[in-house]
Image (tube, rainbow, N blue to C red; front, side, top):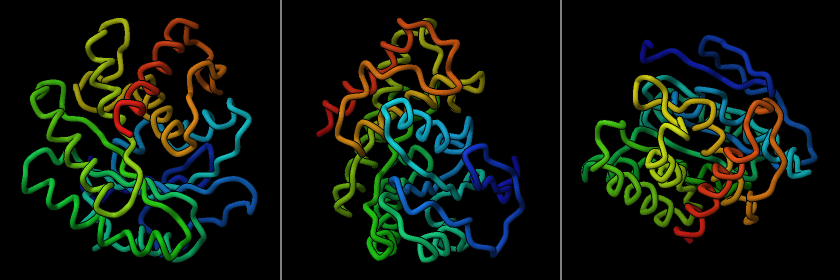
Length: 242
């Protein structure tokens, strides 16, 4: 996918649009408001919409918007400008940020630097930053500790929340093929992988276990055993990274 493609979530069903200076559509005043800033690890399978569906399954309301470009790091978002405009245009309760795995020392420093650049904008919008820990490619399992350190340290540096989706996915990969959480490319999530990430983010942001929640909208084909296992892995990852 070209580097400067963009996918912006403008409603719960989502739509594709070219880059625009127009602000994101306003959100309802009720419910929790969450902005996602990221790349294809956020927009594949529409993670923000899945998070909203998870919240609904818990009797909760989360409204989401997304600014996500293919292959973007947070520095790219800063330079492109849409994320900053989204932060200044509305009030947000949480802002979920991610880039690539960032496992190398120089990339860890890069993530810390640019998440810190965004943090004052998040605070000014009334929100709290959330660092969505992603994962390395399946072919590079040795990078998992570095990815975790990068996102955990970045969250600590800005007083944010650490959402260890990569740790939950790491545990799920140990159970493959029963839990197919990565796509054929060995990096992007399947729909099940996106649901796992959404459960981690919800558990962390809300501070309540996702275990035992009913199946969310759009995942009716999941067996009860698979649903329970995904929820258990998500909650365990959050508990292991307080």
